[in-house]
Length: 225
Ligand code: ADP
Ligand code: ADP
Ligand code: ZN
Image (cartoon, rainbow, N blue to C red; front, side, top):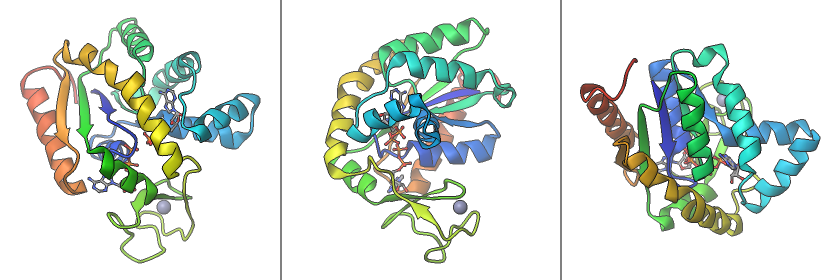
């Protein structure tokens, strides 16, 4: 099963993709996480990428397409994958289609998380993650069960993203509106898009996603599980 999570920054893509990863045993591929790892590694490419990300812009299609092509060919993707943050432009969507077609594969469903812009700023400003295992949290909406201790791995260290500032969010939302939202007609024409109300609480959104996937399976658009 090959899935795409689409939606503006802060919509809940990572949160929901991680859950599907655990539930269905297929990897979450977050291009944001991959780019942050590259920036952290401090390579020449990493330095270039960091400068763009810190300003809230999009990294070039060429880099992303090469990065993703290499990633989906790894053995852990044999039963499928969950894309979180890719594709972000029409060029990336078309390249993905061609990439999958040449492997006799395709996208089974696109889960579109719909969230009001006002709520996005709030979600991004309060977002933080476990420094060790990457589990996501929020100052108000998803706190660890024991304050200051990661639910999953017990770590006491957490990080906030350099680009999760209110000023940068405006640029990232512009990039979503201008470059990413125009992908939707491409997937709608294929009948793959499931609109999910992303304004509900995390568990309610999860249930809506499970329902959409069950529907896609019943309709036969999902080939394997
Ligand atoms: P994205 O990957 O789309 O940028 P995240 O999954 O990182 O979004 O979510 C952004 C922030 O909002 C995180 O801190 C997360 O814990 C929180 N969050 C995710 N889904 C919801 C929700 N349905 N309601 C409230 N907060 C949420
Ligand atoms: P969010 O979870 O808030 O939507 P991501 O972690 O997916 O953010 O992405 C963070 C940043 O990484 C983006 O603002 C952009 O600079 C870069 N990035 C991630 N994925 C892509 C992509 N597919 N194409 C271009 N840039 C990307
Ligand atoms: Zn952890």
